[in-house]
Length: 290
Image (tube, rainbow, N blue to C red; front, side):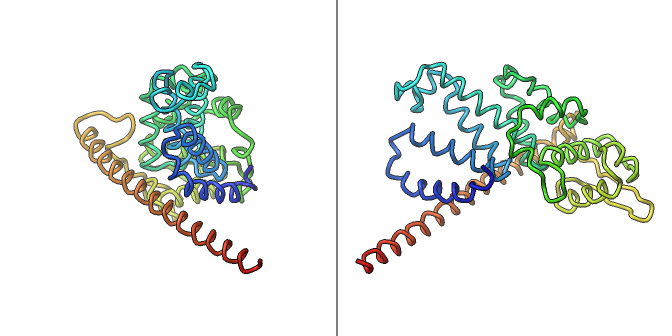
């Protein structure tokens, strides 16, 4: 699936160009969004995939809503229960992808949305338990990670360039971020023992997250210590300052989400324009050949 994802994305981009003339076909729109979400998932763009999966899960949230939005109730091609089962499958995919996504402000926002969705509590496999721990920024235990791994698809277990898997990297970064909420400072050696990796890798992971703005802190390579900067807007914090900080963070996230949506639309329009040019070139080439 990973090897074919670039080619699949090319065809989906072409489909997006043609989809504008079929806006009145909700079932076709649903199939397009579903394919696009799976392609993002296969390409390990987990944050974007989680957003798409969650959007799709809401399209067929209940039989009544499915009919209103063009689901099985409108097409009459499947029983009402099929829409609910499909919505639950998409919701589960959204949870898996957001847990595998790299820690950051947007991921925290999507985690909060999923954590508040009552449908997640009813999902099988105990997935809500790990969702809750990730949302509350609590350290994940090996037994919990192993249980979660049974829900993953093969490309989620694919090795990365450094020999680790997507899941292992996601757990390391999550536990590191959780540690930053518990400690003011920690040595490289102690952090490595906590994360189950060697101290050098723990230092590199922390440096990467700090450098990318996904975690606040500084690194003292002489004394081999990491000093964390605690933000008041943490997931489980309380008090007036924390609530005020969280409100400001949510405002920034909402603004960023709007910017991402606008950027997606610009990219989509650009892809459609390029596809139109390619189609024109191909048509003229064929006409010249004949």
